[in-house]
Length: 167
Image (tube, rainbow, N blue to C red; front, side, top):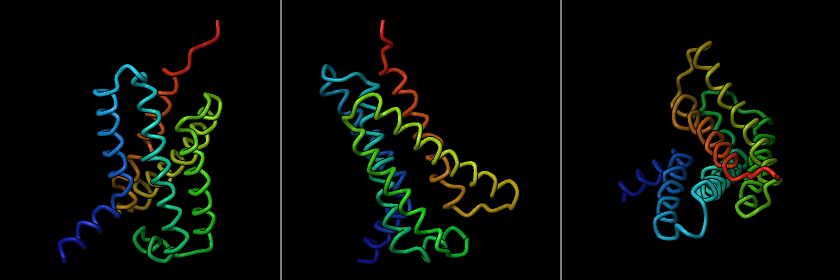
């Protein structure tokens, strides 16, 4: 039973990475088995907006909302009422990311602009903490930081390829 607890802790501690891997696998299967239905860019946008952006943001909403002391401790920061604001931001971006799975181009563009500002701002904060304060806690310097850079970049690139300019 203890090994199951270790696996659960590993998955929950790396939830964003797990969702990224799951989105990659699903996108590959989608492209292989239903290749005629959607372009690769559309498939990538849909699964990466849904899983590593949308579902992960809802997960982070729950963690910041209901376990703020725990989150602050693993990040090496003091707990504060700011956790509630972070939770609500994660809730908002998670919901718009999920809705954008099948939304219009304009809605998707707004989703990507907003979440890119949010996540790249998070990544810059993490990089600053690493560079200036030698703060290399795994949850600051690990997969969370790199996914904050990579997921918006993938969404930007896929959305750019989806958009067809009007003649």
